[in-house]
Structure formats: C-alpha cells, structure tokens
Image (tube, rainbow, N blue to C red; front, side, top):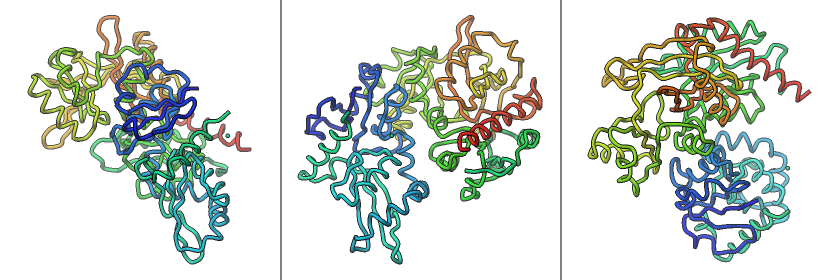
Length: 483
C-alpha cells in the first residue's frame, strides 16, 4: 500500500520513512498522477483544515479518488463540534478517569501522535481517542471538575506547533503506525426532521403528512422534530431528514450524532458530505468515467484558461451551492473575472462548466440502489435554470412532470443508477441533461425533493410507502445484527 504524507511545504516533514512519500498539498490537488494511485493511504498533515481550504480539499479529493484519507472530512467536521466530540468521548469515561487518576493537576493536555503517547499510563487512552477521531496529530485537553475528569476540548496539531526535539518522536510514531481493528421499542420510532416555515424545503406539508401515514402503515411511530430536538435524536430508531442539508448545518450534526448512536439515517452524513460539494462530485464522476458537461476546477492560477477551454457563456459554481444558489452564468471575460473573485472569497476551488441549454432536466429519484421516480424539471420561463431566485427572495420554479420509470429512456435510468451507486445506498436525486442519444450528469443530490403533486405524480402514495419500507427494513436488519 502506498502512503502519502501531504504537507503544505516539503520541508515541513524532514524525515524519511520507508514506504512514505511526502507530497506538497498543491501538487496532490493538481497533478493528475495522484488521481490514479490505487491502494493509497493519505495522511493529511496540512497546517489548516478550515472549510474549503487546501487542507480541507486534500481529504475530500482523497476520498473521491478512492484513497484512504486520515482524517477524512467527517473527522474534520467532527473536530468543529464540541457536542459531538464530547458524545464520542462519553464512551471512554471510565478509561479517562482511570488514566488520569494519578495526575496531580487541575488540567492536562494530551498530545497524541498517530495514536501514540510517550507516557505508559496514557497510551491506552491515546489509542482509543485516535480510533474514535482518526486524526494523525491530536491535542486533547482535560479538566478536573469536582474530582471528576472532563474532556474539555480536542483539536488537531500541525507540525509547526511541535518543538524540534519532539519531531523525532512524531516520526517514530508515524513509522510504528505504518508497520505490518440500541435497542428500540417494540414499535420502531422514526424521527422526521424538518424546519417548519423555511423558505426552501425538500418536501411540502402534504408530503410530510403522507410520509407519516406511510410510516404508520409500515408499523412505525413517527414524530416530527426540529433543530431544538437535537438532544433527543438518539431516543429514536431512525432519522429521516426532510430539511435542506449542509455540512455546516444542524442537519449534518444530527445525522452524525444518530449514526454514532447506531441509528438508521436517511440521508447519512457520508451522502451529505459527498453530494454537498461539487468539487468532490466532479472528481468522483471523472474518475469513474461518468459523462458530464465539460468541467474544470478553477483556482486563481488557472482562471485565464476557462474561456479557451469552455467558451462563453459558461457556468461558474460554488462547490457547496444548492437550489440553484451559488451557480452563475457568465457571458463575458469581465463577468467571469468578477464572479470568480467573489467565489474565491468563499472557496479556494470553484467549478467552471460548459453551458448546455436544454428545455428540461431529467430528475431520477434513486433509493436503496433502485430507481424510485422520474421527473422532467422544466426551466423557468425566460430563465436558464429550473429555479429562479428573485431579488425579493421569492423563488420561482419551472413546471415539473412526473413519468413512469418505463417511459424514461433506458440510458437515462442506467446512467443515473451508475452515478448514484458511486455515492452509496441512500436517497438521491440525480439530475441529467440529454442531447440526442447522449446523457450527461449535472449533479447528484442527497435528500431530493418529494413534493405532493410533483414527484409522486405517478406512484402516488406508493412512493411514500417505498421510502418508509426501506427505513423499516433497515431498522429490522440493524436489530437482527445486534440480537
């Protein structure tokens, strides 16, 4: 197996370890040679993992390339959540108390290098924290409160913080780490998460009611919950998200919390992460030879290549835009420069894509690796998108048209399935454009729209029963595994 240590600059890691190649982050992100390194582990030692920074994209693209990143993006997001880190550490309470029992201080910091710590009585605690958080260089701080040790905080260390005399210890720990591991109620309880009154939601109130009726028919008790119920989410057997998801949003945190508790989650945090970032999705689709409009990753150093490669007009996209927000059509060189620099204030990488006008986009709903529904989403009249956001914040949507799966071209269904199966077995809405006999993936959405009167136009109530049936099946399978 190949091992890549990704650093900001080559001199940040001055050691030679057998089986390890040290690679600057910019080179890993931009050199095509690193996109096809099969059987690779990526250790992200960048100085910053801030959202959409270079270090953040190292872990994200490593995942898209089929590498094994440490940390992965889930771990990076976990590090930002004191609540989640504390909940993860709760399982180690007895070990924390035993490991720190002899410490004669009010507080202590534990430096963990690739799961190792030099103090013998702290080694087991270090290993367990490392297994939970999967961060190569970690600093955990503890405080004693009324004679009881509490985990106060966990953060990543970067190489610049480690003193020169400690670096050989870090190198040895790295080398060592590379040498040749709920019960529910009789009637399952389903939490259905949404924000009442939000401007844009993936299901209208009539659809929410139909989901609840279908849950009852599947033998489940359902309850509508909101962000305010985050502390109760683990009381349920499953979490079904009918809210707009984002990794910097309570939806992701609650999905992660539920997953850690062993619950069934739709959609899971892996799907939220992968579908929520267009840079990741572009890399994943390209790597797996899935056709899409001509697309390039753009940074400040290659902006001048966009027009020669894609022509005008073309489309600029923020990596985490949703519901047609963060997506702009640019018609001139100046407009391209202005909009790109606006986007660069939010993300080091943005996407540029060829403009491919069509009368409608296909939307294929995929659940549990099977097609569930088919819709044509028509463009807003006089506009180039299916959704138009007006200045007064009103949202205009084009006409939707539900079709039977058998009435959609086989190549549309097949391509949608191929693309969605790269993400997982969750609930996805795959958007495609069709020109003649050629189909192109536009994006894969987690948590797709299901509105009563639109997507259910063919299946009617059976659509809701299918979704609830999958959730019930997964709950039962999870219980069987634990029995």
